[in-house]
Every structure is written in C-alpha cells, then in structure tokens.
Image (cartoon, rainbow, N blue to C red; front, side, top):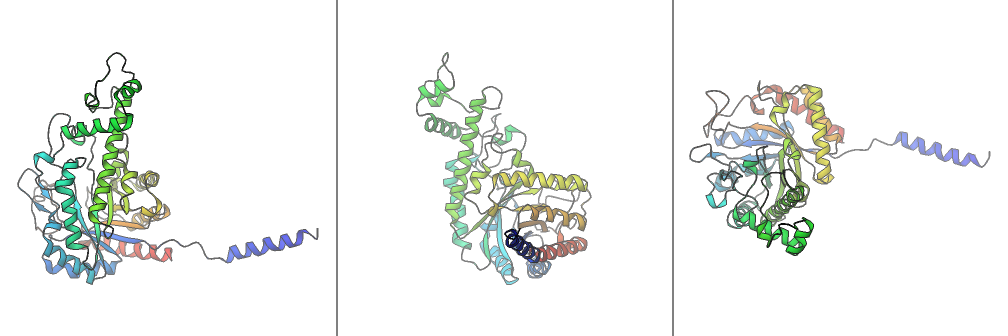
Length: 416
C-alpha cells in the first residue's frame, strides 16, 4: 500500500496541473472580403478600406470587371491590365492596414478568347473560355499574364498575391467542361505512352486481342464514362496531370512572393478527380490556400440543413488539402430575398469553419456591382461602373456589418 502512495500523489499533481492549465488556444483567424474597385468613384476607396479594417477585415480581394463586346463577355483581367489604377487601389488598401489580393480569374469571363485557345466540346462547339489544359495557351497567354503581375505588383507595399474565383468553372454538362481538340488528343496519346511504355503493353492491359491498337494515337479520349471504365480512368488521370502542370506553371510564373488562394464553388469538390479530371490535391501543392465557398443558393437552406452542408464540405475539403493550406469562403446574404444571414447563423457557420481547423476565412462581399449581362429583374445587370448592388454589398447593410463585426471580434477573442 505504501508503494502506491507516490503514484497516487503523482497522479493527483498531474490532474491538478491539467485543471489549472489554460485551454489550448487556436490561431487568430485571418479574414478577407471582396471589393470591386469600379463600382463607385475612386474617392470611395479610402473610407471603404478604413471601414473594412475597423470591422475586423485583414485582407481584400480587388476586382475591376469590365464588359468586352456583346454576348455576355466580361473581362476579369482588367484588374491587372489597368496597372496605374490597381496600384492606387493597392496603396489605398495598404494605408488602411489591409493586405490586397488581385481577383484575376474566372474561365467564363476572361474577355474574348481567341479560337486557337478555346476548348472543343463533345459536340464540336468552342465556348468562349480558355482551354486551361493547353500548354500552348499557358505558354502564349497565361504565363506572360502572370509574369506581368509579378513585374508590376510584387514590389508594391500591401500587395499579397492573387485569388482564383470559380477557378475551374465546372458544370454537370460535359459538353461545356471537357476538351477534345487535337492538342488534347495528342497529349492523351503521350500520357498513355508514358504510362504503358509500349502499344503491346497497352493492348495487353486493355484486353485488345481482337482489335489491337497500332499506335497510342489510335486511342481517342472518351466522351462519357459509359463503355470502358479503364479508358475513362486513364482519361481522368491524364487530365489530373494537366491540372497539376497548370498549377505548377502558375506558381513558377508568379514566383514565391505572391500568395495564391484558390477557391471554388462547393459543388466542384464532387466534380473533381474521376468526374472531371481535376486534381485538387495535386494543384494545392503549388498553391498557398485552397477553399470551397458556400454558393449563394445554399444560403437559402434552413439553418440545420445549411450547417450540415457546411460540415460535409469541410470534411471533403480536409480530405484533399493539408491543414496549413485550408481556406473557406462564405456568402453572408441570400440570393432570393437578398437579405443578410442572421447574426446567430453567421456565428454558427464561422464556428463550424474554425472547429474544422480553418483560420483563413472570406466573407463575400463588401462591395460589388452586378456585372452580368442579364440580371434577375429588369433594372439589374449589363452595366459597368454602375452603382453597387446594394442588396448584397456589406457596405450598405448595417445589420450585416454589425453581425460581421461582432462575429470577427468574438472569433479573435476565442482564438486568444
């Protein structure tokens, strides 16, 4: 009995220390928002950025979206083409104590894309968007564009990096997503050769005894998953490799000084490796952050359903992204009624995000105009340099500002 006393005393001391120890702290969140610089006059930038900082924001993603021609073409690259204006915006953000990111990308809205750089759909159509898998497009357009960012902005005080928004622009319509042009077919043949080594090995593993292929070029990319599961898998693996190369080329062109935040709609996690050939995990190795965002229509769910959806997306995100690269983006307003989320719901969404170990968060959006050609009613959409869409802009919604201010302050206090 006497020999057990020291052990009991030791256990008592350990329990006492555990009770006295402060709870494990978590990192203070870094909070972002979005801001379209051509909504209102330039004189609004400084007071807007000062208010963002006062509300608790740390970073701002700057847009400058302009129309190009007709038929719904918009140019998201104006933010890096109008260098003097963007530099003034970056400087104004810096003076307010904010880090500035440039929102440069949406595949459907990159201006008028030359036919040579467009993807070919399953029906032979060439939609107005770049074929990001194309090495020629990367070499002739993408890499020079990014090198221009590095040259013009890397040394600017306050510049932090770039943000991809809606990066892959997937839908359920395969005729829009997939690319079947000559360059894609040739690269697929190269992928098969690097994978199987010889046509004989390819035929053996595909059981092509009755109708053997005579060259790798004989194998055409499948248009659907129906038919050969093995061929579809190889097509998806090839496309996954190309997405990794796209990400690596992006990093190399921007250099190490630019942070790259890659965000995509929550839908797209389900349209990735074997449904689209989009290797999220592989791409993230070249980027600094990856985050899905709650699409605006999901904000219409009842509270329990919305939080369940958020947690499901967070679990899927963590399966493809290292803990130190986690990001999350959420709307804080609804699309149908165009009204702010209730403060308590925002608080619960943020808690779910932080409980998942994510401390880099975007609230969309401080100020934006409706850059679509067609709006949801007769007097919205189709104008540049128009007044901001006040119904969803944080700037013009006192209830939304109050809710975000309180939630951000609470989150920081909890982290400390």
